[in-house]
Image (spheres, rainbow, N blue to C red):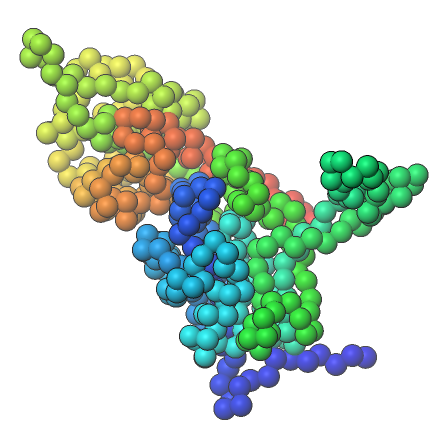
Length: 417
């Protein structure tokens, strides 16, 4: 029987230091600042950082970047920052170059897990199991793979006069999918390696092993460049944190700065006018079709015009005129027998911060002030009065579908056990 070679402690008896390292260079030829572009309301970088933090197996979690904006996002999501030098920030720089620089500047690190920022369906349990392979089974390197059932053929250059050939099948005996195990392909989600390997210029070597991830979790934004498609995948298979997705029963939304662009228009006759986007109207309607209560909030400084107020009421919305939003929202919640986790709140300024922090779901338009951006759980791609409410409505419904899907999976798992 083979013996299990566990990872030894340091010579001084200290525990092995395991670091997670996400590489997030500012330059991107495809999508500018892709690593912090919002994906389903979370910066792309935030998805893997949340998984790394909640895995609770790393002694330190780092983002290596050359960009100030990426640094801000990294710190907001609980990471330390390694400011890479210009020498490893070029288009020609390899990931290994940057990892080696990180290792040289952090001599306390024994094991490095390079996590790909563009793998938003990574979950904590993937990382926990891989760490166990390194520490309990004594592996020197572990990397993630996905099983693919693709028949590969030899590429033929135009004008070569050659014929293509099969690389991994016999055409006369094409196997059925269920009769073929397929092939293991790197999916790039993560690479664990010892410091010794990294210093030798390797990420895979020594006692090497792979960690197989199911295909549904192997989402790579570098490949799945269609952002809406990627968002659908993430909403179904992404890791949303230790808490289950909230199921909102009431949505509250500011009139000014959310449903409208915050501007007041004046006619030649001196009449004041505001506009509401038709997409936002549709967002309200789809929420009402799902039996959600929708409440529009106005302030004394921004009263709802009577004609518009009547239109809201005809659509089944409640109107509240509020000077203290927190007090008025909590009063309304008490009347309806709701708690904060059942509330979706859309605000746009400092007066909304408390509600944005407390609500189970919260959102702000893309052009909201920084104080509101820092308090919310979802930042819309759309600006105020330009479809932000419709976008948040769709986000709420997608999360409701995700919660339903999880309940179905829990039910199946419960019956199976």
